[in-house]
Image (cartoon, rainbow, N blue to C red; front, top):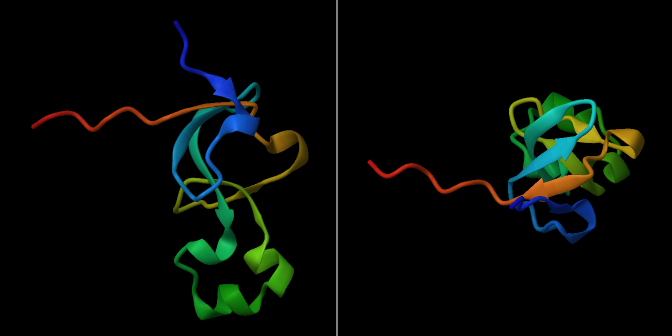
Amino acid sequence: MSDWQPIETAPKDGTEILVWHQHRGQFIASYTSADAFHLTQAEIDSMDEETLFSESWFTQWPDANRLEGSEVPTKWMHLPDDPAD
């Protein structure tokens, strides 16, 4: 049984989750804003307020690419638990 769910039901609080996109496969992403990432002052200065604070889907740090339009994943699931030591 698959635990994949429609992306519309995914958490939108910055939680990292496993997502799926038909052209990119599986990867980790979160719904957040660019200001949630460790940015240099130069990177912050290069963005207007809307770009810095608007929320959308982002790939996992360190790439932190904003995903828009057809790039938005369509399915999601929680990340598995870390392995026991």
